[in-house]
Image 1: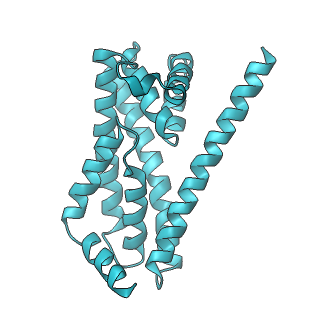
Image 2: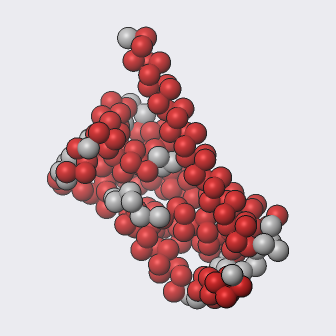
Image 3: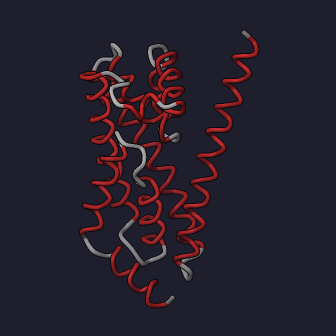
Length: 202
């Protein structure tokens, strides 16, 4: 176990870790099966515990890479539409796309921020924003706000766990990742409840 811990801590202290982080977040912006946010949490947790990169550096790299990934999803939505590929027509992504289409025109800022915490909805909303009449300049501003709030939240959770459990970096890592997964599940559950209540009232 000590050997594994040493290997993990050695790898995350390499400057190449920022290249890996950026690549994962960029791909995560248009393909929601990549552990982008988990990597952010992991690096910030280990950094706060003194065993990884500085959380502030993780924050800025993550915000920039997230915006690039979201920008690619926005471009895909504008050029080919939000349902070009087969995975987008599966039940879960399809529901997210429908939800995005029904709300993006009226409240793009709120929808982009909320959707950041929901993997499939995040990509669906961004592609739908691209397919809509939302101006690029306005989208870029909203994207900056959404990416910043989303990343600050995860880095704050990770930094708190890493600081409180600095003597046990892997326990801190597991705690912060677990908290992120639980919070995402709660947000998704709340959205489902609200959708069902709205459906039952109509």
